[in-house]
Image (cartoon, rainbow, N blue to C red; front, side):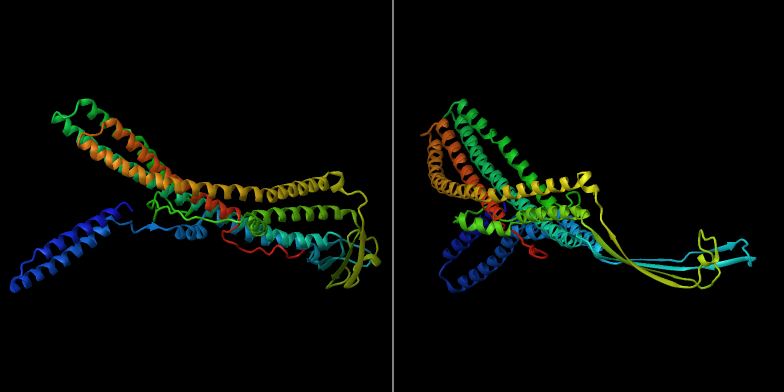
Length: 480
């Protein structure tokens, strides 16, 4: 970025020289042909020189645009990757909530050796049995809320991913704007220091020629050195913004160079409609969707706990396979209690807990408290949307008015500083007057850059508050 003005200046200088060479050609035809060949050769060489200079001074090859930053952040950001893993984990958690409606099967194969004597028996017998049981819930009040809770778990993970995407993309965007701002601010202050250093050289020449006293030279030197800490501060802020960019894009600063943002901050007026955008934001913002889903999940958790008060009917089928006979049951005292052959038994059990531990232990009250807290938080977020959008809209209007005012003031301050600098060179202006005009020009130009920066930040905040970032699955109407 810093090299572009230099490359353009070189191009203009070279073209001016070529033009002077062309206009100075004599009218003799043979000599003109020779000169034309020389000029063509000069054009070729200048083209090569200009290409090399533009390659050297242009933006680095690894300069990144805002679009590249957002895309890389979306693909590689650690927080987003963790949220994606959470979505996969929620799919497994959904099976836990649905397991209540699925049958429960058991299979056992006990085997052993029977030793002992009973009337009419002698010796040692080996035996083996096959046992199976199948249990199915026929009626349970916890079944519907468990199914809904499993679906909500997936939706919560999806919206958590959306929230992580919005937060990380917004942070990367702000870091990109901060890097552009601090780099431009450093450039402005460096250009201002260059002018002040030229004034130092001028005052030194005038002092050595006896046209000015030493105080003017000292004052110019002090004025030029006053910008050193401000330039260093802007440079540190630029490096900090680069580190934030690298963190958002999952770039290891120890192995790779810090990302260089491409371009400059631009100002584009923006018209807003708070009422229509408020209605749209309430529908599409990921954090509001997540808050509503948390209310639904807490409500389903409370219903699952309260289901312990209601009766449940469970049917079961059990069977035993005996490959041999004459094997005694555990605890049997007579032959008519022994295994005679294979058998199958079915039954239905009816249970009803009169006193439920969820009520006694306060689990229901805790679930109800969590649901009420989530409801209050959700309503608070929804009520804050119009206020937030109104504040951002006012910031956009304020920065737009400020940018127009500072743009006009910057042009006037630059012209005034140029005139005073010319008068100072000829001795018609005092160093104090030059210092005042230069400081005024620096403040107005820095203020203009700050207004553009604040406007871009407000635009980014508007996009975040209205939910204009990436949208993923928002199927929150499933399993109502």
